[in-house]
View 1 (cartoon, helix red, strand yellow):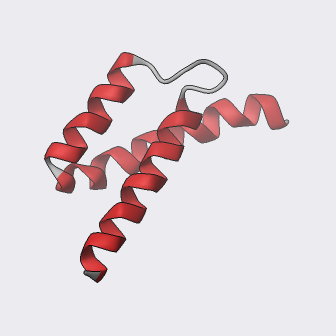
View 2 (cartoon, helix red, strand yellow):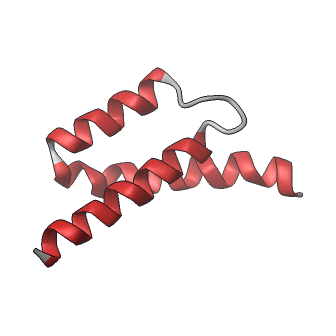
Length: 65
């Protein structure tokens, strides 16, 4: 049960990072496809989370600076 809860939190965090990776626009098709593939293949989250994090930091620095 704890494993499923942890996986759910990972998906939630990934979804938030994906949203901010495309900010201020909506999430693009490539980002949505990556999220969809990660639902189908959860180990892919190890690759997707750092990618979305770097994109989100890059987008938000322009706005918050």
